[in-house]
Amino acid sequence: MLAGAASRGLPQQARQRRPGLAALAVLLVLGGALATTLLVMRADERTSVIRVTKRTGAGQPFGRDALQEARIADEGVSYWPWSQRDRVAETVATVTVLPGTLLTQPMAAAGDSGAVAGKTVKVGLALKPGQAPYDLQRGEHVQLVHVPGRRPGALGPSLVVEEALVDSVSYASGSASQATVTVDSAVAPVVAAHAVSGEIALAVIRAQP
Image (cartoon, rainbow, N blue to C red; front, side, top):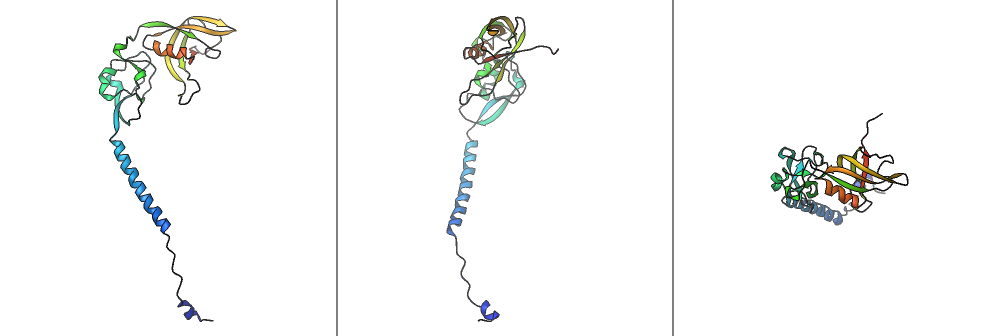
């Protein structure tokens, strides 16, 4: 047997190199550099759109003080461009728009669309069971809520009209089947479109007992 000093002098096995790990590290570095380059390139593709800064009810004008510029990536959505802020300032909201919302084309009725804020019209609604309280009465004030059907990409329910007046109600099998409501003319096309699709619901505004 070799003594301790002699055994320490024996040549040791050379450490094996791992070229696979080195190649992986190089790929990670290159991938990070490519991602950074793409982000820089995408920054140049951003577009200026309009963001609403204060709550605007359906039928109410936006006004210049409610509009703010926002820079976003162009995703093909029909947002109002910031360059048309003066035109949008003279339009009215077709739905209730909350602060921070990026304004899309259907949310604003342009001045040349025939919509007039403050002018009321009557819209007929065909109702399914569950879309209105069973005891809905003429003369009550209601909220009109858009409830999208179950389809891919559908958004959640949204408030279309904060307060509408029930002009008449018809019943079938113990529930409201038809109703006529008075709304601002600016939101009437949106309400009618949702009603035709069967995607409108009524929530009665009543004082707590």
